[in-house]
Image 1 (cartoon, rainbow, N blue to C red):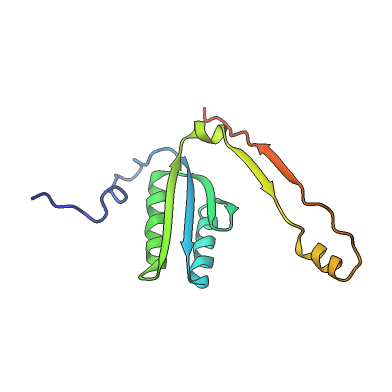
Image 2: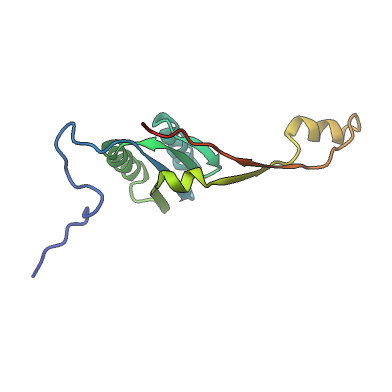
Length: 136
């Protein structure tokens, strides 16, 4: 009978210096506990990832750093309830990415509107096509 490792597919050891070049990844998470969610967010920022939504980050890291991030996340979560996905993304797909950012009025404007000092302006949306630098 063949033995299966619980780490198969994510924690295959590689020789030092044998890490693949950087690839873009999206980190998505759903964590119930506020303290863990905040630490997970800080951890993603420490790895140079950019927040794209409240519980989603995008950035470039190599395979070794991705494995290290996965281990640190696993250690942080422990036995608590959480779902985390670290998804590699092809550069061609990122070049074709369209971004629709639509934000509501910020907190200062809401406060001014509540005090009757400002008129509320309509919410606008902005469609951006992001250019990704080609690796040469």
